[in-house]
Image (cartoon, rainbow, N blue to C red):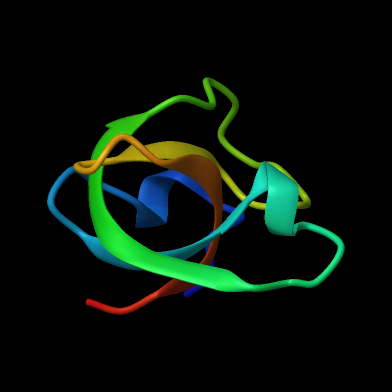
Length: 64
């Protein structure tokens, strides 16, 4: 499973995201999904989410 499909992501899931300012370096930020912001069922760069700490970014890895 990867972060490009909305059906794979739900609130409470542990994920690694890439923040907007980290897109060039690819630095990942770990956290727990609070809200799913992308309405489409698929996005090639990853579904955009808000983490419980308020960080917003695109899902790169699902951790469980």
